[in-house]
Image (cartoon, rainbow, N blue to C red; front, side, top):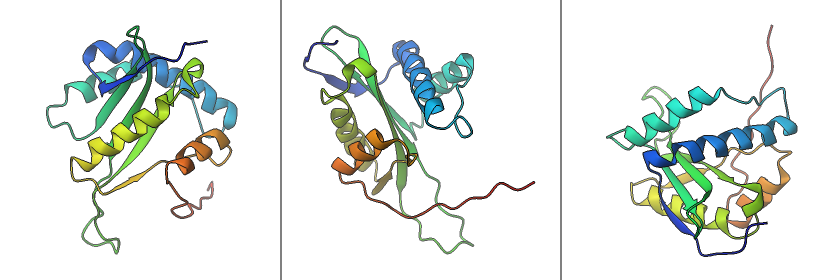
Length: 165
């Protein structure tokens, strides 16, 4: 079990890619257990390419922040992924918005890592003019629902779907 220690939350760097990949793959395994019909474990090299591209994007549209323990280990991350504005022909009003994805290593849960990451992600988003942040959570992921609810995230609607042949 990880000892409780002060955290540093900072923007991710290229040197963090290996840690980000491990967090993504660990998170994928946990989601696979929730619903294997919806989730998958992505190929490692695809995840490496994703984070490398994000961290070398000069425009910096999206953000990745990491939580680093005192010993230098990356124990969590949050991605802030900007939504595109709706096209002019649609009825939704444009609002600068993003989706957050928070991942914390199992041994670091319950130590405030997720809260520190989410607070930093909201600050990052706000500083870039984003006024609405959402988190897409599977209804069976009760820990995530509880976590985001504690931080003021509320049910923002209902997404209905149907498989077609």
